[in-house]
Amino acid sequence: MAHGPAVTGMRFFLTCDPGNVRHIFSSNYTNYPKGTVFAEIFDVLAGSFFTIDGEPIRRMRAKIHGILSNPRLLATMASCCLHKLRQGLLPFLIRMATTGAPFDLQDVITRFVFDITSMPLFSVDPGFLSPDDMPAMHVVDAMDTVMEVALFRHTVLASCWKAMRWLKVGSERKLAAEQAVLYGFIAEMMEARKATRNSGDAGEQKDQVAPDILSFYVDDPDYNEHLLRSTIVNYLVAGRDTIDSTLPWFFYNVAMNPHVVSGIREELAPIVASGKASPTNGDDTTVIFHAEDTKPLVYLQAALFESLRLYPPGPIERKTVVSDDVMPSGDEVRAGDIVLISLYAMGRMEGVWGKDCREYRPERWLSDDGRKLCYVPSHKFLAFNSGSRMCLGKDIAIMQMKTFAASVVWNFDVEVLEGQTVEPKLSCILQMKNGLMVKVKKR
Ligand code: HEM
Image: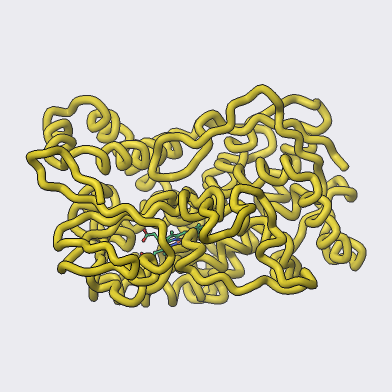
């Protein structure tokens, strides 16, 4: 238990004990909502799913679950991913391999992920990753600022950051400017969406056009203009911030562990041999893997999970205590206490993961014969959250990450340049502070 500044009476309970996590997220979850302070910190998401609790989130989750399991939307997501690989990522990497020039892989991943998150949301490709143009990504900078300022807000009294917001100074001044950029981007995309969806074949019936995520919201009377906008921001955060911060750590980990690269390629080889991996345009030695072929790959999934264990995109969860309670660890918490769960620490604890907890070892996720993924409860592996607030996009995220990782690992050797400092940045999202400079070679 830690205490906030003397006069405030604030009390923090910090835990990384899986028993406590199960209690907080499942057995007694109604006693541990996110709370109003959390909602205020993320005011850019006001009223949307990350910030609400109780009955409203149950209803909202049911709607999102329906959307994210719609077969036509899922097919659109898979094809957006393939399109971006074929038209954007792979041509870019082939060019980099030809010139041998170093580049920031985190930046390229951000471009890719932002595009594939926006396309099924708005039916519009923002075009951040295209073979011949790498436009500035002001909206991405804006979203990064939201997460950096949110971390600052977590660490000071609400009255302090609210005063800064009122005075329009410091990080709050910057946040206001970046929020305007973010809202401007959304307005632009909504306009472009109208044009795209109206320009369909004249004879095409409305219900024949594949749905995008927004088509489930625009006519819903429960969503006024503000809630619709914060819901859009929330989808961008859910899809983009998470995958975008996972993949650079994945490539960093595998580059440091060449035997994992071999393991992934060994698993991919039969797909290539069967002719199922399709060639990219104009270069028949570079291939793309399809979601249905990468779905059964357990070693690749273990390699991704192992990276998420060590580098969870959301390194800390915050909850509020409603009524006095005793944790399974025997610790007492009081109504109003703040509970902080460190996923980052939990992923590195010997008591949870064994003596080799600091090693990057995908094998720990596999059965002895290496053919199956072992069951690991979500209160131990919390990267996708647990219990009633479990991530609703987990399968989509795994599909997108596998498609990306397979196509890069199979076609290229990725060398992480020496002499750079690879470290996390101070933010609510575990991105790399200085990017990840690499060189690639075509295999
Ligand atoms: C590596 C990828 C991902 C990770 C690690 C991840 C992790 C998480 C976590 C930790 C939460 C809980 C957040 C909280 O309540 O504090 C969450 C919630 C959620 N995620 Fe994901 N996520 C990923 C990708 C995605 C994708 C691609 C989508 C959408 C297509 C998505 C949709 C959602 C939704 C809708 C929720 C809200 C659940 C709720 O508030 O009850 N996620 N995710």
